[in-house]
Image 1 (cartoon, rainbow, N blue to C red):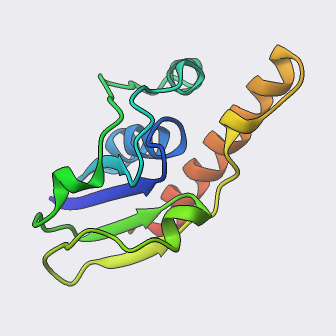
Image 2: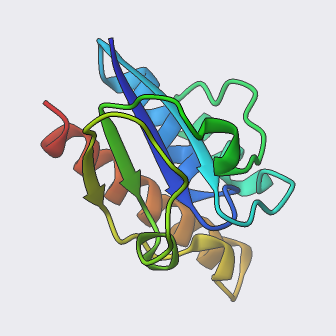
Length: 135
């Protein structure tokens, strides 16, 4: 089983969606997600987007990457530019580091439809990267 840690700053949107997608799409992979400065909640639109696309969200919670210090991972994936430039906690092993720059749908403005489109775009970007870049 390959272990994956998906990192973002708030751990409320993109990293949560990537975690659920990896766990559903990739046999032989187990993903968790965390943030450098966790928001303390999972954005409801993240859960709605996953459900709308038939992905089981599980029971995600916004958590600190400190929970995973000392754990071994095969992959560490950052999905926001802020997290990519931060000093990660001490992780044991020789994990592969990937950066998948994904716009933050939580910052989307406009109508409900505009916001839904922003979440769908982030979802689709992550899904494509997972399908193409995780063997």
